[in-house]
Structures are given as structure tokens and as C-alpha cells.
Length: 208
Image (spheres, rainbow, N blue to C red):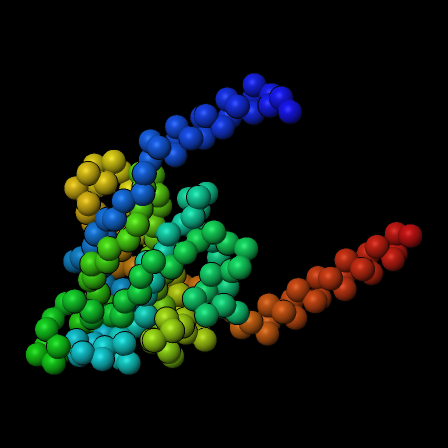
């Protein structure tokens, strides 16, 4: 069987592109820097400086935006909030106050978190932070809060220099970032989907 030259060329280009952007382990420092994370108003998000801070501090995720480099909407029906059809991937989790103070020696770090995580990344990979105004109900399984508010912030593009040094740093966008989107209820989404399907069926029937 003769393989068309166009197919051969496409295969070679894909191979070269893959070789040009190898995945390497990168230590990403992500946090609020000098800023604070707030709820929908002006109140700093709950924080903790204790060893079991995830029982008290607001939940946050470091997410890889997938091959398309575009952050995708939260899916509350999923344990980690990532839709089955999405190519986004949660790479790390943190709680408010993590890494700010030694355990039990300082008051809770309201609205702040700072953490270092080693992730596998390549040049042009995009990461972002999703944070909530509630604690995780199940830290061991990295479960997102069932209700409350959330926000996606801090787009971060991996560069070749970061690959060479094995490290990258970024902080939450502005001096103050607020959670703005309401976490939808999975049941509401299911009802909405069913309603749209019924509406589509009625429209089809009407036009017959």
C-alpha cells in the first residue's frame, strides 16, 4: 500500500513539533502575592494557617488549560469540576493560608495562599487558577464545593526559559480578585438540558 506524500509530510511535521516542545518537570509557584482574594463583596476569603488548613481555608485549584490553551467552564457535576469532554486538567490543589505561615503559629492568612507544585509542562502550555469562597467538603478526593461562588484567574503561559530553569512564578491577577460566578447546581443543569431537548423536539414537530 502506497502512502500519499502529503500524509508523510504531515507526520514528519507533527514529529518535529513534538520533539521541539518536550514536556519537562517545572516547579510552579502560584499564589496571591501581595493581593487578597475576596468574596463577591469586600470580605477576604476564609484562611487558615493550621496543619489541617483544608478544613478551614478556602479551596483553590491549579489547572492546565489543555491543548487548546482555553480555560473551560466549571462542571459542578464532576468531583474536580472538569467536564468529561474537556481537555483541562487539575494539576494541584491548595487552601487559603497554605504556605503563608508555619502551622499554628500565626492567625489565619485571610485571602492569601502561596504554594509550590511540581508539574509536567511544555512550552506554550497554559495554566490558570480557579478558586472558591468555600472549603472543599472532601480534601482527600480534591472535591470542589457544592455551592457558593468561584472565579477563574491568572492565565500563565509556560516559556522555554522556564523549561530551562525548571521553575515559573505567577500570582493571582490584580491586587484584589473576587469570586463572582455562582456554582450551578448539577440538578439545575440537568433540568436545563432536558428543557432544551424538549424545546428542540417541539420545534421539530411543529415544522413537520
